[in-house]
Amino acid sequence: MSLEDGWLEYGDTVVAPLEIRGVLALALGLEELDLHEDLSVMIADQRLICAVPNTMFLDGIEPDLERLNALCLEVAVRGLLVFTFPGRGGCFTDSRHFVLRADHVLEEAASPDAHAALAAYLCANQFFDDGPRTFSGAQGYRFGQRSRLEVRFNASGNSARDVWVREVKQ
Image (cartoon, rainbow, N blue to C red):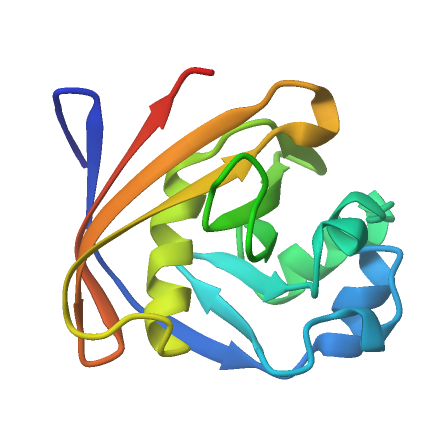
């Protein structure tokens, strides 16, 4: 990882699909049908990533932190990013990031590295054509600590390459 004018470089990121929708939904305090029906749960950069249909579902997440912790340990990831699109404040996405720390899970208000993983997820799900791409993501609304993260990368064959992320203070 390197830093250039406020941008953090994450390089290339890969994704792997995972069939755990029911268990994941339960850990988030949701029903399996509350997860976005057209998008699978995947692992990208040691994070589970899943989508919900809109910000109402995103805001409605009341995670069972013990279950979420057990799930993260079971599938050997360091966190979970739940997102929706479109996001608030003119952003392409809106998300919540839960991260495994020692023996517990906590929620972060802003996470550039999770957005690098989200770029890979979005490419794997064909959100972008090949070529240089950018998107912005909102995070932290749950805490009243709104953050805007800008992501730039090269989309190539359903992969994200040369991913850079920076947080823009609001």
